[in-house]
View 1 (tube, helix red, strand yellow):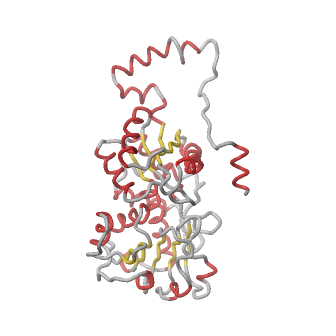
View 2 (cartoon, rainbow, N blue to C red):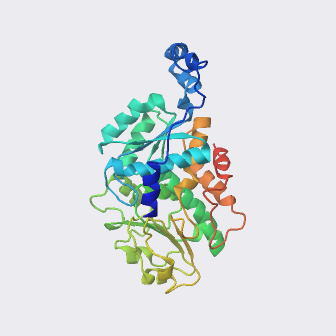
View 3 (cartoon, rainbow, N blue to C red):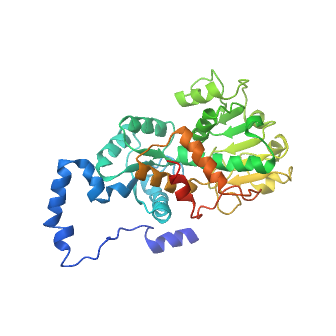
Length: 371
């Protein structure tokens, strides 16, 4: 109820303000007749819009509402408060002007076309809360068209998660090359962290979704799930959650299912388990359930009311600052580099502190310097 009252009072969280004081003296400069001179100059070379307008610092946050936080497949209007929140973080953390654009279509071709039509206004596009595999297909098409794009659910969540895992392994005395990982969910965020594991050639990984463990030869899978099957699950086991999590060192949850795990699942894991229950707002398991069977564990969620919040807000403001200033895209190798730099900001990681705060003033500069 506090959040409802907060939003109702504000009537939204963002607004547009002029950079200048409007006066009789400068009216002919920022508007007619002077602005016509600027328009003529840009008409000779559209790239000069980056020099003479706000375009160089503008980002569009694009969603169709098909994976809205806390709701799922919903109307674009219900996504607006989430996108406004991201716009606030863009501005507060990285000085970027971000515009929530919630589209009234869930058709892939419409979303791609909308971005193409909006391109003259923005230096970059942030895809957000779009269902998979559609989000992957949209990103692929936009990259082909040389449109600067970053998918925060896929890339941002993956970078933050991998950064947390680096320090979690240090704390729990485990090594990346020796661990066994259980990944719940192969949607945008799940596939994103899978891409990092694949880049690093970490194969001791079992991924499951609503249909069970993903294995080679499973019928009905799209090309992205087949991609997961080809690289993970080296023994090609077939079953469900109970088998997938058995004897694993690390559980990473992007399932979207609250209370997916119970104490028996934790008991079946290896000693000193690492549990990243990242579904939001309801994690796959709570510490109270873990503690029924384990006392030496490390726990993280996507929520701010528990220690070790793993949130893509750690990443996207700095990512876009780097993208806009350097005109570079984010590769798998760069994602790993950024994650390693984020992890290094915590000099002495501990069970209840594996990542810096979202409000750490070093974040944006650290990420930007990775470009």
